[in-house]
Amino acid sequence: MHRPAPDKPKTDPKMATCHPLRVLLAEGNLVNQQLAFRLLEQMGYRANVQPAKR
Image (cartoon, rainbow, N blue to C red; front, side, top):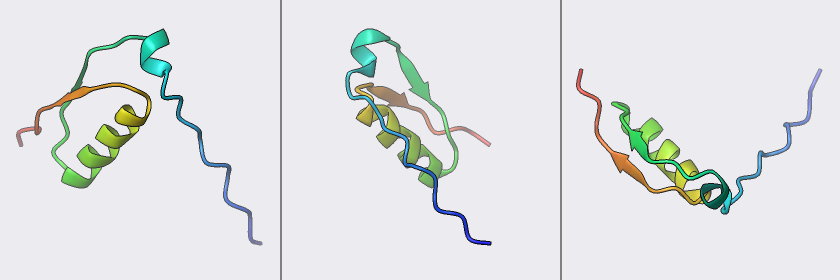
């Protein structure tokens, strides 16, 4: 059985205006770090990126 892909969640670029946050992004996996950074950026946030130490 094939199911259609779920609708892509929409990001609100004004989210940061309504809900201001300071974001520290600490992720050791570079791909995950870039993905999280882009999602935050699309919502209007600026993240300080700190690579996680292992």
